[in-house]
Image: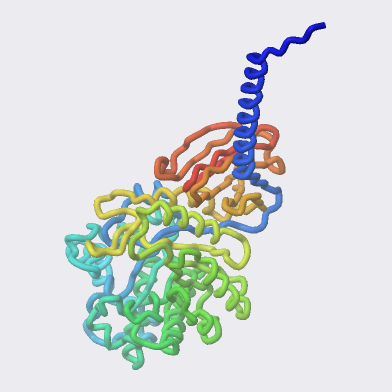
Length: 482
């Protein structure tokens, strides 16, 4: 048999073989890339603890909107009260009078006409008259604010202080800090009148009280030292307690202290010197990762009578700029996750600073601009609230990719929430294994990114306990399984 060498066929075969090898190489490379970006997030039927109970915001003097509170679904709101806001002059014109004992015997010695006017008809038409030109501030009174919060069942947390960052009001500088009997009479009366007006003369359900604001920070108005502040807490607690035990005997109330700046040692000292006069530990923390200082405060609490007391972050976020930046917005969600993780980084309640701008330029930046524009972080905050707020069960969740942060919560109706953050330049493909809790179910997927501002991007189904997820670079997703 003769054999023929067909060189054309051989060359063609070699070309095909080469193409196949090249294609196989590309497929292998693609597969390797896929594997490196593949992530498994597994949710277990094991509750580790509860998510943050209260998530809210500090007020801002440039706005107050019922629609914003509803849209965000805030369940707490922080208000900066005090003498500069509601007693800009001595309410009765006689310094040091009436005395504490006289008011305890007869609450009508307080000039309630003054308080009704201050709360209902503020100077220049703005309850924020103390922070600048009233006509440039939100137009409305304290009564409207507290009525709205009560109607929406939003928990008010109110700061009581004698002096603000502008060292106002001038008449109160003589009791900053209080030293004489007359000083303490005036302070006790102010605290009593604030609590009594809001809850006895009216019924605004204001039961959380903060003693001053950042007393360890001279620029915030407090003129005393730590020892002076400890006494302020004790006298404040006495005035608040008198209102509740005398007029509201079946109502709980809570006192927050020491309201200090991040990194401060005052919380440790207050837990040692005046622990019986407050029941909620409240600090501020503007770190990019709030966990470290929270853990430090938790350590101090363990060594005191407040080992099991609620810990609040009364201010966090930023008081400069950042709310329009994507990276900062994603980091905001990560901090919300840190605060909901059971353990030493857990935070019972928090208020981001601030919902609205404070002042005109240069101003403290809020989630909502002066013209009502919602900044980028507003939408990140809203998605985090939807996933975490309310003290839900936090389920054990593991991720095979350390670059993907995830937390899972489950509400009382067994609805499952999986919140994921990818603050990296790579996309990831993930398999969410929810088989321990759900074999099947309808899902909705929200995304926060530059192109999707907390919007639903997909509706799908859990199949055999699994759900495929695509996590774009620099994004966060919330998967809700009904």
